[in-house]
View: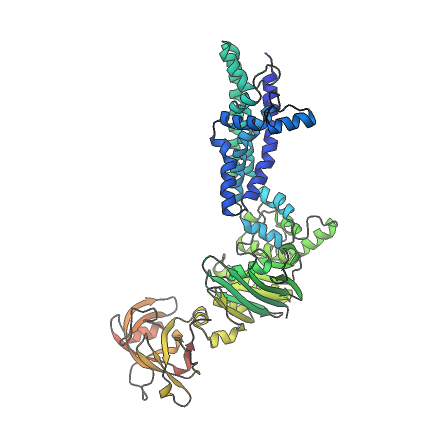
Length: 220
Length: 368
């Protein structure tokens, strides 16, 4: 059995989780501070990928990154980099689709944070950066970790946008989910079933992690 | 003047207009919940930005809307004790205190020594490794105070520090607080809605009502001789009536006023201001009489509405026969010794005669 899809899926999921972790947290932190109107608009825009069918998200991404589209042309001309139909195209797709999960959970965690802790930190002379990393983040740790796990799971299972952006090239852009579909389509049911088992194992592990985190936060 | 505050801030329900000066003293801010006390403290600390005004502390301008000065909280060197103490839940007691000394303090050894010294001073030795959630309310307050005083603030502000505690513990911490404040020695702002705490701890007091702050007065004089309805209510007085002056019938050594809600003319020994709107009478200044008084001054016939037994006395609610008992101030509250009540064996519904001491009728104006 060729393990490339597992390797590719994991690296796409890990890299996009890291991207989404930081962008999601900072978006949640700064957008919570904005005025109502701006907050409402940004909130809708940033959450859209969660409710849109992934193929629609993929369509929008192609409009932006495709070889004959502005960003795609710019990257080709300046860096000689192709943004679609490569293994890392999957990162763009997975990041966009997984972002809302991180952003939403982080925002929920930040909203339940007791602001007087930050205020008392300020009056004690602590810098805002210190307060963010040493007081706010630890207090919201459970929620943020749960968000990160969900985002990772979503990135790992991404199919729609990935298939449009990266396609399916065995040994190049194949991921677990695109492989399962390809194998089924080509009547290779036995092998498809093996990949399904792999996927089940990973999903179970993710769910167990989420539950453990939740139990820990309740016990506290 | 160590502290000068003159600020305006539009809030949801009202406009906050605070103006006061404080010396090196413990100054109380007394007001009912939601009158803008906490917001005032947060404006001074730099957590909330006022719309207009100026805040000066020991010659340093913290905020000046005209000169566009608005120091960040970190640069104000102002200590604020929050109602819930705001200890960092993820840090141990020791780390909470270390954080106050600055997380990048080079000399960790020196910092540890100083923290240990404060732990000892605030009776916290042995709790270094505990989390705030494992401490009692009193201990949490001590940690919060120690943490603030470690930063050597130029001004200490206490926001309802005892509201989360009750009974005996509250009193013990009040005693401890007296020592802490004495040792601190600089300006302290003490916010509370409890007249007792203000009376015990403060030298002067500002009464706040609906976002407006009355000029500071000495605590004793506020309790003995409150000038406004709000001050009188906050000082614990429970009997009020709308009142009008009766200038034609002034008499040597006193003035007559008409208590509208009680439907009676009362003789009052305090000087009565022209703009009088209310009078207040403390329960202990109302006496039940059995016979006639010679001069018949300040005697009212009242019907007993309700009798409530308190721990150490009987509360008797009565309504004047000629008054409007449905009005806010329409009923009077008497506090009688239990023996006296039993002696009289009076009952609800009966009519009794009461006498109001002219020395203890407080003329009031309604707004600050």
